[in-house]
Amino acid sequence: MGWYPTRRRLIALGIMIILVLVGFIILSMVDTVELGYSAIIVDPMIGGVVSVVHGPRWYIKLPWQISVKIYTATDVLDMWTEEATGNIGDYPAIKCLTKDGLEVSVDITIRWRLDPSRIVDLYLNYPNLQWKAKTIASILRETVRNVISNFTATETFEKRAVISQIISREFAEAIRAERTLAGAIILEDVDLRNIELPQAFKTAVEEKLAAQQRKLAATYERERRLIEANATAAARILQAQGEARARLIEAEAIASQLRIIASSLGGNETQLANTFLTLQLLNEIAKNGGSIYVVVQGPGGAQIMPLLPLQPYREIRSE
Image 1 (cartoon, rainbow, N blue to C red):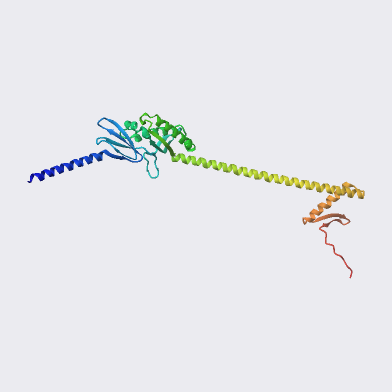
Image 2 (spheres, rainbow, N blue to C red):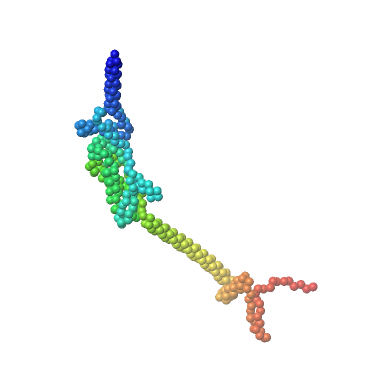
């Protein structure tokens, strides 16, 4: 009687074990691939890739088959160094030599994605998935160094946009030409973040720019003063010409008056003109507060008599 319960227990235990194994097998056959990823199904028994599944999706594979997940959406490679903190991106900044032998540090970021239709060939060339570290980073360093070597240190500062365009173009060509990448890399963007020049060179450039600015300011100030001086001189010339014309007009008017007076009196025009000019001179001296004295020779000798200014007229009345 005790043998049958034991047998039933063994059968039940065996069934449970089978169910667990079947469940484990089923679970190992069902898998999922997320958005932005692709799964390459590798069969070790046949020694090759059997299929590719692009996410997001559930899929079924045989229990012994291996699923390799590959990120196919936009990926980033950073090469930069923060001098102040010492922080770096995926890799440090690229050290390059300029055309004139000066060492500069280039900070750069690239973005790319994988062509899902080419990832099998890419995987076969890089089964450890190290195409980013082994090839892309290496090509980027070589491209940047080759481009920078064609520019002087000053040109790397002045022609940053041109250098960025050349790096983008040549890097894209190098990626397409690299056989091991199998054309799977689709380049989206190359961002030349910075070209860091040595501090001594930057100081020299800043001093040169400051000197140029001072020179421009001095040139401007000199031209401004010259313009003002020319304007002042022109104004004085115009003023002098105006005064001369006014005097000429006044002289012509006086001469005309003198001719009329001389004609009416029947006198000498020259003598009349001399008399007029003498009186005019005496009048100007009187206006300026001066005094005029006349030396008169008399019986008792020379006597000095005041002529101007004249005393005010006073009426004398007898009492």
